[in-house]
Length: 219
Figure 1 (cartoon, one colour):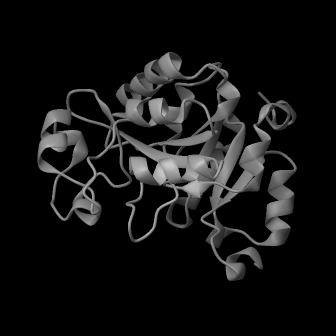
Figure 2 (cartoon, rainbow, N blue to C red):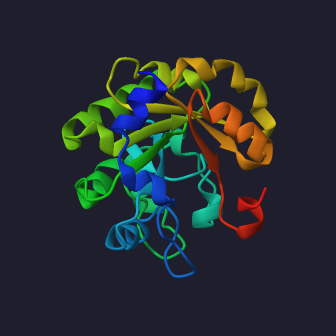
């Protein structure tokens, strides 16, 4: 799929802004069901992060180590879903949601950006589980954009019909060499200025993250 095809297919709602990890605040934790429900009520697209547990279940959380958002150490990929749901809570008291729960909650009411969080060498196992889960809950593939820092997880979705964007961070700018393999690229805003953005967006569906201030927009 080339850039022109991706632009024709992309849900226009993506272009008005995306709720990064849901619409969260001091009361509602990031990547929690309440944060996603808040975004859905506002008819805003949502971005979320997906990890795979030791028993092959998909959960929605940003970091591999859950301490930042739960107060307790624990690596998602080394624990079962039951261990996570029993022993960990988000800072607002919610259970850590599964990917299925978020998909059911949304029911394709708003489009989604799904980031696959690869841990060590589990890219294939993670991508396979994400693909199977999406097949059960997503009817319109244009409602989903798949992103990852690991190109291997995105390669798994070649010819799947989903738009794929490679994440390129300030500390891993070398990943830029893989850009031509995917429909789009997601740049760390610290890597970009207006001139560079215009140049790269001629050839790829291009997004900047995270743009959440007037200062960043003005760069």
